[in-house]
Length: 123
Image 1 (cartoon, rainbow, N blue to C red):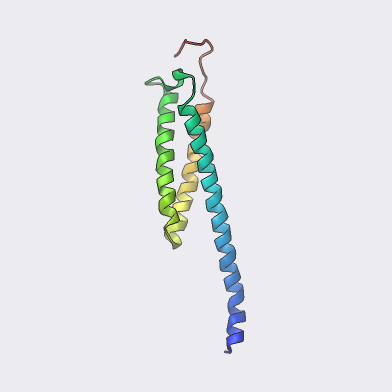
Image 2 (spheres, rainbow, N blue to C red):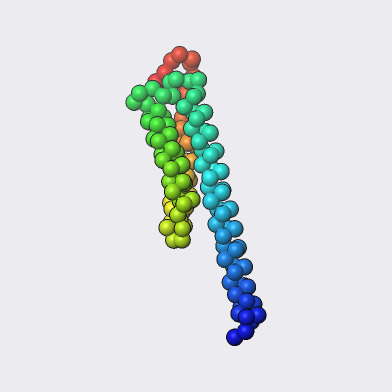
């Protein structure tokens, strides 16, 4: 087989690999973007001016604490995933994507928690 023929034979494979890399990069970037949005939501909730939300024993406060801890942990896992390769990298990003989706649901439920109608009156 000549050099030219072998290069032409590899061209579709190389294009596919490049396409796959771009697709994976976009997937990872979208997850990182969602995670950053989630981090902003968590920060806003933690710094919220309504202290009743964070009352000890309050289910919303517990959910917010869980959300904050898991969001921080995911940032560490993203760092590990970025330095991984092959199947391990793909598996990590898959787990991260599912975890971000779950945390987005928790954030939504915390945001929808009913706040007290009367200022100064907490549950």
